Length: 221
Image 1 (cartoon, rainbow, N blue to C red):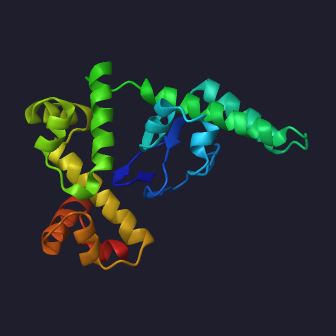
Image 2: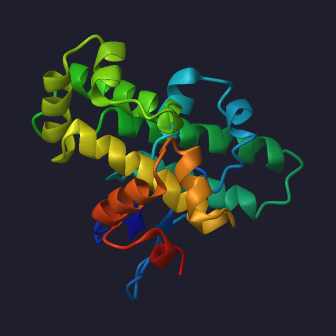
């Protein structure tokens, strides 16, 4: 499958968390099966009782190993979906909450080689800051300052976690937002560039091509 600009092999049992507006696609092999649960973004806070930890973790796309506990709840959800019980809706909401919480817990505790729990939390804080400031053209130094660490330390964490520098991480995040704009709106490329904080649309196009290996117009098709 493709999630934003990254390809993931999902031959083994995996949990896929795909928040609203993230570009994704699938190429299924014969015999693959699983469950899909779509929760309305506007109802998710209510379903999860406004739990900030759950909502923040599910706000970022992620891939992690599936668990037997999660599969068990999905099977129960599937059974209740077919039920005619008068408490069906209440049970579906309760099981939806359980799945969201189990998924968030699994993503919070997934193993990342070479990254400690504290460093993992720092990366998650960086991800959240990037999401909040995509259109402000923050630099690495701005993010590092907000996190209370040096730019060099932030880049080391990013490389250890994802194999790219902090600057590359930021560019990728901005270009993924550009992909969503290109896919889901009819805005001109120049307007998208300006909206994402670029003063020079040609610079935006160069960065887009470097990250996506194609121009914005080619991506839009």
